[in-house]
Amino acid sequence: MNLFDLSGKTAVIIGGNSTLGAEMAIGLAGHGANIAIVGRNQETAEAVRVRVDEAAGKPVARCFQSDAVSREGLGRVLEEVLAWKGSVDILLNCAGRNSATPFFEITEEEWDGIMDVNLKSVVLACQIFGKHMVEAGKGGSIINISSVSSVNPLSKVFTYSVSKAGVNSVTKFLAREFAPSGVRVNAIIPGFFPAVQNRKILSEERIASIMNHTPMRRFGEASELQGAVVYLASERASSFVTGSIVTVDGGFGAMTI
Image (cartoon, rainbow, N blue to C red; front, side, top):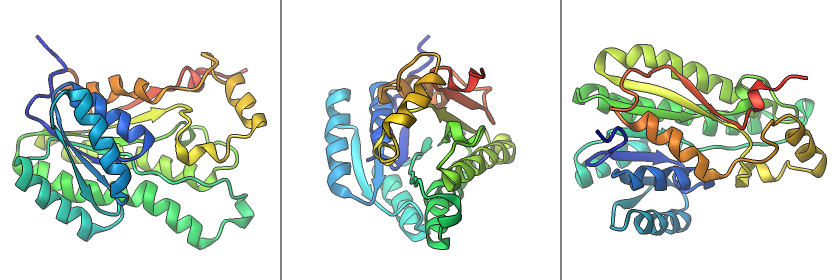
């Protein structure tokens, strides 16, 4: 029995044109899923679409344009995806924004911007796509991307850490809320993956600190998130898994002194 067969499933990936989103899209497509790549920048989304189709060996992906925090835009994407494939079976929330602004210098504008992209976008997407899954009555899987800083807040990324702690709370709350409808809600905590949004704050000193706190003594490769996302997306492999937070961090969370 193939526990990880996603044939016939359609995955909507909010922030699918990001570094991590692209690799997870490739993983899902490689196991049979159709991929809706949602992002503001259609040039980067198109580049991801090409990579996804090449990995799948056939056309399985399509680009959709929307801001992650636009209710109107996400609602339009839902209608377009349903017209394209007829269903939404998997929702992956991986839009993200970070900043290393010192706490006393954080403006309300920056706070609102980070909280919107990292947390509000998850709530909006779950309201729109999650509602479709619940009402369709066919189950489904919602996967939110959290962070190691959601559990043990990291220095220099105050707002980001708070927003990701919120993602964990939303994940557990909606897991309870959606369970009677067969819609599972889980999260992935990636460790340190040098994506575009966090390269800006990776000084030599910070890299050394991260390595000293990571038992595997290296950064993660974006493709190493594929196994976790495929597992959580599969209704066979993770049929009794909801409200869980799966950690992929090279042992960072297990390290003390």
